[in-house]
Image (cartoon, rainbow over all chains, first blue to last red; front, side, top):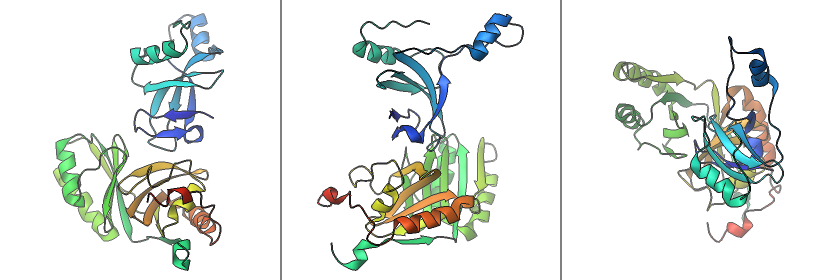
Length: 107
Length: 187
């Protein structure tokens, strides 16, 4: 079970209070882009064993979206951060590197 | 702690309670002034509930507060909002008939809600003045304390009967797991 902290209201809740929103930081390819890029935007998702960035919504709480960095293998949560960003904040990257020294950002 | 009254929780629906949902920039001084002067309490900060004698403000999310007041005052307060906050971007809606409020009276109210909400309800973790939006069983609720042994719980009106039955079932005498026993000395 995941224990997530909502950065919008500060509540530390357990997984059932939140709704998952899939992979974070997708770049949208809309009308006018190459078909391969559009296909990738629609269908191709990362499925890493290890560090992963996701979107979550505090569905039973304040109702706001936010981002979470966690490990898919151990369910360790490295941190949560605002939804109003397209890049991962440095403090989250530092928190991941403290726990996973070999990990490198691949985007 | 063995007298009969301390072992029961009275569940009652507060049907005369009025509620106004206010959304807007909660850091706006004008909005704060109107909210606090109409409700007669200070502005609640994050996850706070300031309710006195059925009137007050409950923080709901970073851009939403719930104003609680007697049902008969709702029309007047909404009119005041329209007059005084016309130029400020906000939304104020009467949700009195869209929400149901329950009062849980009795020192074991924590045990009742804790049966269905994934929340630490020990007196250390949840005290008078705090509010929490979460789930009760599988429905969304919000609750806060009004007195040391009394809490109020809000849910959608369409779920009122379900929540009422749920609370009454959970409050049956002799059904408490007493998981908060270890906290009694701290309370």
